[in-house]
Amino acid sequence: MAPRDERVDLIQALAVTAELTGTQLSEPAARVMASDLAAYPLQQVLGALTRCRRELKGRLTIAAIIERLDDGRPGPEEAWAMIPQDERTSVVWTTEMAEAFGVAHPLIASGDIIAARMAFRETYAALLTKARADQTPVRWMPSLGHDPGGRRPAIDEAVRKGRLTSAHAAKLLPPPEADNVVPLLAGPRSPAPPEIRARIAAPLKAKSVTP
View 1 (cartoon, rainbow, N blue to C red):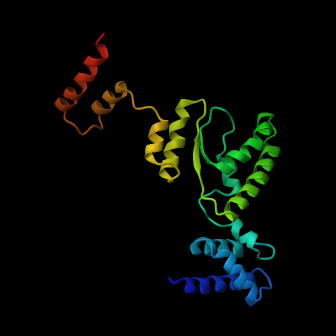
View 2: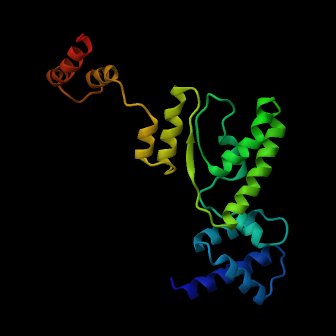
View 3: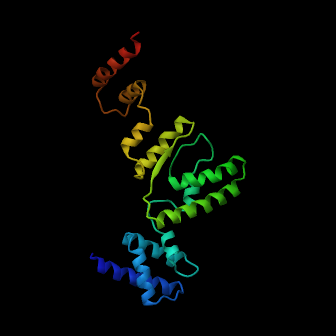
């Protein structure tokens, strides 16, 4: 789609959204608003306008649209649900989530979860708006807790959702132990015939008993 066509579609979407939210929007104002939003991918803006039509209780503003852009960052409620509640839990989060967690952590440690949630949401929402206004790309990073057994689920989920690469995830997790490989190969779900499984398992068993 040519840029001119995109601009026409955007102005039309702005006009419809303004009408449905009870906002007086002149054609010159719509053109200026479209120019400000042209820096963002059209589909993100159209998605944000759809959310405005469903959610907005007041006037349509640039800030309200940018706040609803889907740039890969979770919203405040989803972000709060993802943050760790103790030092044992691992998480893969954004830089904005980590910064907001730093504000909320003392309140979590003191047991005041309600105040912690409010502090997190307020801080994160401000950071989210600034990151989207500045068009800062989302950055996901791991924060590994003290419980080694809880790290793999968090990292595997991040890989599935495209938040971490498989290469990065491999560096965060230990390699499977040889002792765990033998039962896997010899288990009832293994497609290998018994003689093949025995040949594979023998060198591993011999290695394990070598002084």
